[in-house]
Structure formats: structure tokens, C-alpha cells
Length: 506
Image 1 (cartoon, rainbow, N blue to C red):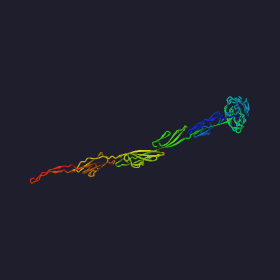
Image 2 (image 1 turned 90 degrees about the horizontal axis):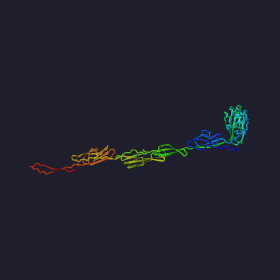
Image 3 (image 1 turned 90 degrees about the vertical axis):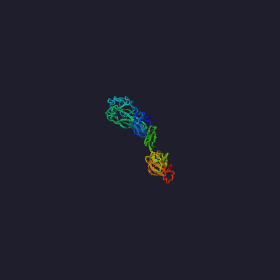
Image 4 (image 1 turned 180 degrees about the vertical axis):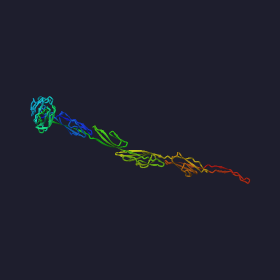
């Protein structure tokens, strides 16, 4: 029963999660065995790896990737008996002649701890195992294909094995050319011993047992040069190839992006994840998830603009007792959906749901308008006070004197308190006579009667008036004569006397 090899483990560690868009990850395949016994490292896939021939490459990933690392290594179970030659000249065969005393002749070998003892031209190299142990020192023959070392070993069918040996050069001239054989067939290519003496170099090849249950492994010298071609072997090794794998998954999280379209009224703001926006545009809000990755909210803000507007109204006065309020120039993002007129102290004469209304009377008038955008309705209002100028001018006629039989005309004088900047005057009478000045503040009249003056303020059309009554004193005086004595022939003259008395006017 062959010992069970391959007890070593390989661990790539825990899986890794990266945020979008990925990045670099330091991989580290931890091997429990001797790293010097690793004969092959294979990564799958190799995409993104800084160096697929080492155990700790850097992986640069942009999408989720599962990496598998597989190593091939010597097992700890060396199937070669006396591969370090510490047991002397035993457990192997050779086409060379064993001579423990002298290596001066070609085609001989010795088990020694110092090849210079057997051949003064050989370098006094130490062995590979400890530097002071045994090695197989060889003076190469000129005949190619001779077996330098062979051993028959039981193996498992259909199993991969690694055949390894350490070789050094004893004379610098013409280093040996060696090749591994298994059951008479070469394994891999021939290899050269090092050019520097006493440098130990390891060579190995992989051999698959197929259906074989045993193998005769040999080291063959292919160098036929007699000068030089001197070498030493040590630590010959045959073991089952251990193939160990582990995987690691590097997950690159999907980019977390959310689109939010919001509508707001002008002057308002919207809060997204603690950030406030009040202007139209596109914004990016970055949040951190529970895994430490950023998620992005793409915010598109539409702002509905609404403005109520009323054309400057005309002033109400005595010319104009009605006017129109025009709100048709109010504007909104999607037009105006709704008009509503109201008043405080005034009077709306037409439909208050129209862009324009007719009104009368002073007061305050309000217009409320709305517009819609998406699922929101926005409002705006404006107020206007209607100017009112209905103040009538004050006019006063100075008290006139009485007319008399002697003075049948007189001037009537009116005055404004105060006079408007622009005015019209008109005198009228239902029963008198106006001789002149009908349109001035002073008029000439004839005869008693009622006289009326109107004063019109040309700025607002308002009228003030005053009335006066002109009286006439045309009563005739009363004469009462005294008796006159009769005239005679004697008294031919007489004095007439009378009494004169005025009557009250009217």
C-alpha cells in the first residue's frame, strides 16, 4: 500500500465584494506546504492578473469574476529509496562502474562527500542535502545513452508523478547533458548540468503512469565528450504530483442608479436624500449603501413658472364709471388653466372666471391664476387698487345786489374753492336773462331770476354748481299831494305841495 500523499492545503481566502466599477484586488493563495516544491501554478482565467505565474498576483476586475488557482507540487512522500545516497551504494543500479577509491577513469562513479578525494581534478564540492553528506560523483563516459542511475519503484496507475534530481558540475569543461527516462522512454528534453562548478541545480519532469503499476526510472548521460563531462547527483526524488485548487469570487456590484423626475412650483424646493433643489436642471445625489458602495440618484427637476399680471387700470372718475381689468398677459409654464377675480369694496360686472373683467367702483381687486405641470398645480395671485377720482369742484356765487329801475343789469361773480387746473364754466337761468359771460366766472345778467353756475373739472369730468336768486327793486314811489286852494282872478297862482313815500321792494 502506497502512502497517501498530498496532505497540503491551498486557500485563496474569503470572496471579495467590490463596489462599481470594480478595481484592484490583491490575491494571496496561501499554501500550507513547502513553496520550493511547487512545480506549476495555473490561474483560470488569467484575464486581469498582473502575473499568472505567482501565487499572489493583483487582479484588476470590472465585472464579477471567479478565479481558480491550481498548483502542482511534490508530495511529501519520496518514493525513491536512498535518493540522498546517505545509505551508500545501495538501492539503485548503474551502467557505470562503482569505484569508491578513484574517479580518474571515464565511466565510473563513487558515493562520496568530497569528489576531490577520488579525483584531484574534481572540485571539492559539498553535497546538496547538507553540504557535508553523500553524493554520487560521476566521471562521464564517452558512450551516449548509458544509464547513470536507475531504480524500479511501485506506482499507482493513471497517476501523475514528478521525477526530480539535483546536479552539479565537478569540472567546468563540457558540462554533462542528462535526461530522465521512465520504463525506457525519455521524459521531456535533456538538460545541461550547470556551467559553474559546485552549483547545484534542480531538474524535474512530469510523468504519467498510465496503466503501469511500477516504473524503472533512470538518469542517462547524453554527453559523449571525454574531456570534462564530470558531475554529481543528489537528492533524487519521485513522488506523486499533488494538484490542489481553490477558488475566489470577486463580485463587482451593479451600479445602483435611480432616476427621479420631480416637478415643483417656482419658489418651492424639493428635498432628495437631504439635499435641497429649487432650480430646474439635472442633479446627481450620491448615497452610501450598507456595503459601503455608492448609489446614485439622478434627479431631474422641472420648475413650473406662474405669474399673475394685471394691466395698469384706468382711473374711475365722473367721465368713466366702469373700466376693464385685463389679466390676459398672465403666464404659466403650460399656459393658464384657471382665472378667478375677487374684490374687496368694488363691484365685478362680468364673469370673474375670464382673463378680463369689467368692474365699477373703487376698491381692491384680486386675480388668482393657476398652471399645471405633471401632477402639480401652481398658483399665483396679484392685487390691484382701482384709483378713484370723483371729487367735484366747489363753486360759489357772490351774493348779488338788487336790480332797480335805474340799474336793470348786474354782474354775477363765481369763484372756485379752489379752481381746478382745467375747467369749464356754464351759466344758466330758467327765468332770467344772461347777456354775456355764459362761459366765464363773471356773467352779465338782465332782470331778476334764478341763476345757476356749473364748474366742470376737465381732469375728472366732475361738476360743481351754485345757485343764486337775483331780486329787483322796481317799486314806484307813492305821492300824496296836499290840497290846492282854488285860483281866482285875484289869486292867480298857487303853490302845490305833495308828500313822497317809498314802498318796500317787491
